[in-house]
Image (tube, rainbow, N blue to C red; front, top):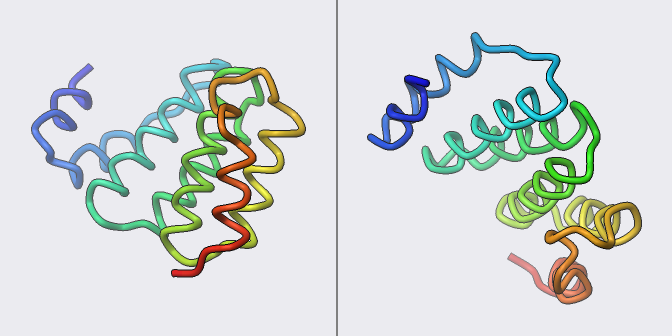
Length: 119
């Protein structure tokens, strides 16, 4: 897919353009496309937009693989933009709903970081 080459070349603006035109009802491909858009925004130093797309990716087609992965990325981006309350909420959802996922590793530490650190 051409968009992955564009991402590899760090042409994030064009990657966002291509991904914005893409849609899929596939349980994995749909969330992955939104999540990759989040990655492109994050790499383009647009954390608010990255947060928005990670959250969209997490909620698009809930499943045990992409949902916790993108909840984790959304929570990390929420910390970046200073929304600690939202980060706690997202990390807690991982703990509650996806406790056996890779994203749940060290989840207590992530929750505590979100609760007790400030920007």
